[in-house]
Structure formats: structure tokens, C-alpha cells
Length: 82
Image 1 (cartoon, rainbow, N blue to C red):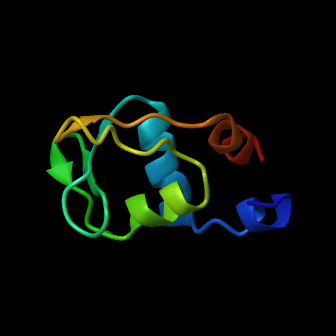
Image 2: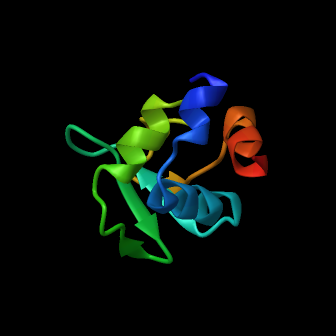
């Protein structure tokens, strides 16, 4: 993802990324797109996890675990710092 693309993250995507950075999220690898839980509840924007993964802002889920902690990438940290 380029710096122009990270600058155009929606407010919702930034909020979800902040929640991941704060350690409040879990990510699962079930189905056609990842399942993202925030504070134990399914994210209302079911495509948010997919968008953040595709952009390289969060790490992919461990395929060996149905659910695990979500983690932010270095690119994700840089996007939050803008």
C-alpha cells in the first residue's frame, strides 16, 4: 500500500486499526474472509478485516488456529502515525 492509499483510509478503518493496535481484537480464518472480533463481538463492518489485511496493515490470521489475537504490521503503525 502506498502512502497515498494509507492517507485515504476511512475513519472506520482507522478506528478498527486503532482497536487492533490496542490489543482489543481477535482474528479468525473461517470462510471466504477473515472474522474480526472487537472486544469479543463481531465487527459490524464485516469487510473491515479483509480490507486491512489486503492493505497489509494487519497480519493474517494463523491458519492453524480458529481464532487468535489480531496484530498490526509496521505499515499499519505508520498509517496510524499520519
